[in-house]
Image 1 (cartoon, helix red, strand yellow):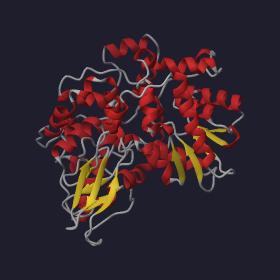
Image 2 (cartoon, helix red, strand yellow):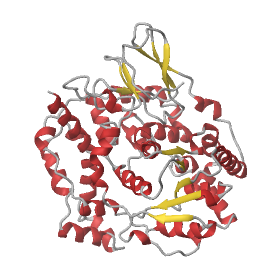
Image 3 (cartoon, one colour):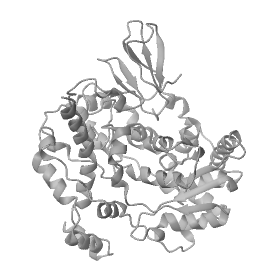
Image 4 (cartoon, helix red, strand yellow):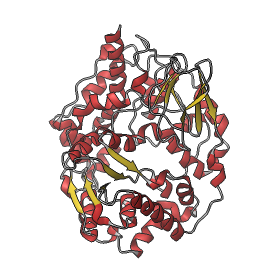
Length: 471
């Protein structure tokens, strides 16, 4: 039983289930034991205290990973439910959390052949497709990558699809994502459009209103993406998502995790983090140590490593399903189903490496775009385009100064801004051979590193601003 509204002490004093998370906790649920509040939206728990305190380790982990992990947000009183958990309100009105059996262990021996895995995914997609009203369109964000390509192949009736793609290179129309999507659109005779991005810094407030300080603000580009799709599509549409498909298929290599300090490697942050050592609050790492003590033996299994990566990162990547809902889409994906996920994880490691099993499948059905000699750009500089189009508002060193070293905040402000010299450096760094030499000698600017830190610090500043306004 799942609820999506807030609960307070005023509800009837009886034991009842408020929330229950799935095996990944794919829809985050936040709670405040002290004020006996729970909600699927962290912002609904704000404002209870005029001056909410930061949780030292929760804040450290937020900066280190770029999102909340280990069940604790950066705010002292606000935690979130773990996977396979159930929340009760007991007769006293207090909240209790019950940890359920982890279904991962039930599927460790669940093995299918590659062809049977493909068929299982197709059956699940077509069953979902058949459940929709016959005249309902299906929105498919089509990157041209393996995940959206497979979902497109699985559909029984591609004529229902409205496909949209954004590019990430200098010339977005020449981006690999767009070039591959155009090719697929021709093969399947799709109604397809390219969406040009670059103004998503205008959505900082919208992002904060939905996600608060639970994660960094990188997903704003989806606000721009779906807002522009909404301009083209009125009403409610079904939405087919490839979320999680890549991690189950084999995109994450094995890690050597030797102690609790290595757990951040499982976060798969792609550099979207800030330097936690610039905090001005003393911190201990009890939550990491407890997590390590509980799971270190299972983390020797690459499959459990992959599941742990998704569970750790779910606070961030859940936005891939949550943002479409904000725009009145109804998202669905087959890759949330544990049998599909584990069937993919249990394929032979040598076939999962670099997703060889899927590459061979696409070659078999004539969709091996990678071997067709399509000319495109794999460069990703969308963030730099966004910085140029909508410059970042400088962070407030004074507001953040009690939490983070002001010199670090000043460095972020200065380095995340583009000027002619940095633009020239960035362009040169992308030139083969020359760029490699510059990078080896640390001659490329730290613009992207500072930008990632900005995206982590901005939500913290918004929380502090909220404290100031409430006091």
